[in-house]
Length: 225
Image (spheres, one colour):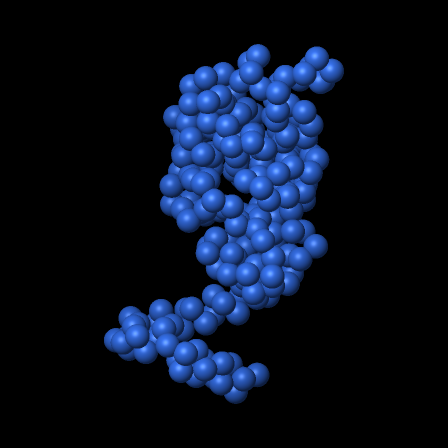
């Protein structure tokens, strides 16, 4: 089962805050072009269970794409599908969503198109993808492996990595750097919360966004320490 404590901590941050934290650490994790197709406005966070799709080859195991990942998933996990950005054919569908909901999967990310969007929405499953398409994967796409290293929009993702996704996009966090990223994200969130309060209180936006205000916040933080 995905660590509920980690999930709760990550859900405090939106994808932009996590992306900023990765930037400060010199890490890459944000991917572009993936949008919420089923439940816009829902922020999700969890641990990745991966699926690798590709061309149908004779030597591949005879299993329905995504089924192995659904069976391997634990409550709170997020299934992440390498579909190589394809939008002409689906890499995920409604029956898979139904099975995923039954296992307690928190969301599905597809680097490409999915189908049965209305069914997934009715099931309450957040699905992020590049597009919706009714075309079946049967005979066009096959599962090459699952719970293996994959590539999402050019970014390497491993099973057990973490991610945060919302209306701004999807951001992956390497498992080995999770605590560092959370610590930096907490600092960013605290600072931006103070800045937002100042704007709401009437402080001119130019002053709040200026370097002098940032310096003031840093001095305040040092005094608090």
